[in-house]
Length: 116
Image (cartoon, rainbow, N blue to C red):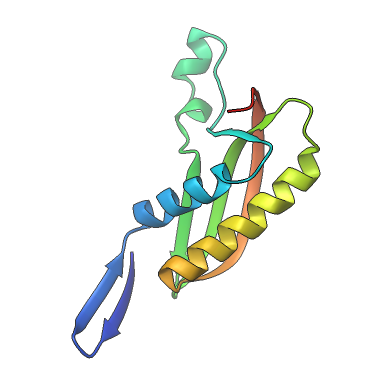
């Protein structure tokens, strides 16, 4: 949780709120079908640790955020360009909405999906 002190009191922004902003920012990018940790194809996959990861993780240290966003790319999209746009949009949106400096946005393509 990031805490800012103002003359009127303090402002706290939870990592969950930052993650939600990042998720919505990623979904704004053409070529992103979904923000998801990936689809498990079997019961074993559903029960594995990897399927339990959050699609967006936020690490806050000394007021600086590091984010990891798992996406499903639209089949046929240029994946590298989509990832770069996700990085840019997530970083700018989080910084603009929260005032938190974003040092890094890692994008993981967890699979492919259909356009929304």
